[in-house]
Image 1 (cartoon, rainbow, N blue to C red):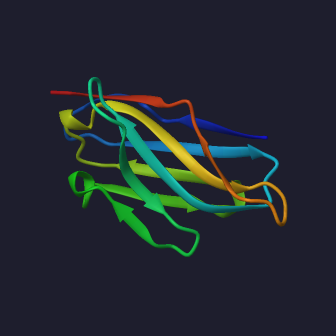
Image 2: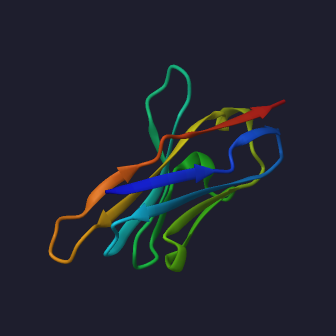
Length: 121
């Protein structure tokens, strides 16, 4: 089993910054892609940023140039640096990490419980 622990959410004024962290713990042989999704009230969950094991990144158009995804392989942790936050960024943010628990097994996408980000005007 693998657990993801998120941290770093909170309340921030528009234009401010926050850094989200998500650490994976448990049975981990290797980690493939890592990513962040978000879900605002009344809206569908959407991809915010994704980082593959070979370093390729993908960002939602709405966050390009403002958000940066990164990873620390030694700590099995993915980060999301969010700058110049806007009210539309208000949402619950979820991390997802694609984990291979043992050699030869099929990787599985684990999800965090979510952390609230609220941007005030």
